[in-house]
Figure 1 (cartoon, rainbow, N blue to C red):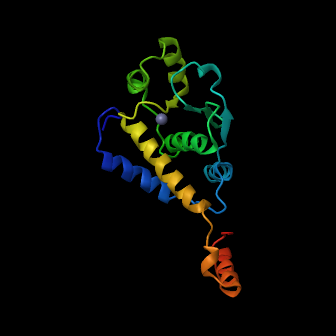
Figure 2 (cartoon, protein in one colour):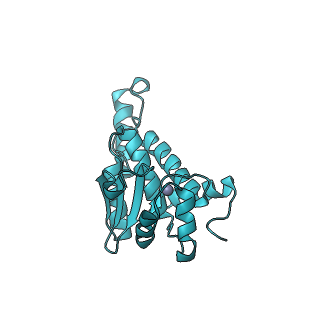
Figure 3 (spheres, rainbow, N blue to C red):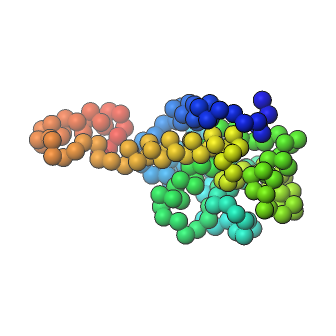
Length: 187
Ligand SMILES: [Zn+2]
């Protein structure tokens, strides 16, 4: 199937959910820890940099730039932590889902993703196989955004206290903490 074809929304969310299900999400949640863990699992560094650098004037909030030695994610500054994590989660979606656009579709892909981008920048993006967080009509963008949504939902759940204090006496609490420790969680 062409990457530019319109796929079903159900299919996009399923692809994203299956990819996320293969990853290990740990307590206590932090995006930094998750990215470090992914780098180790993939045996390839993922580096997060604040600021879009040469792409600052462009109309997107995050960008994935696969380099020979690492995956680089740049995100625009000035966001809250949750917003920033959402942008990073989207770009991680592209990385995890292996969203490298075939050369013959790349120009079309970037033009459709962000039509305001000058040709010279498209040329540079093509050289770098970059993916942008922008046009959600494209299947790759929808899948990455689904991945981001599901990851951020899981992150929110992992950020909640493991046990609500009010319902437990100290003995019950200790027992549950020990059980949780077996799974590598900490409250
Ligand atoms: Zn994207």
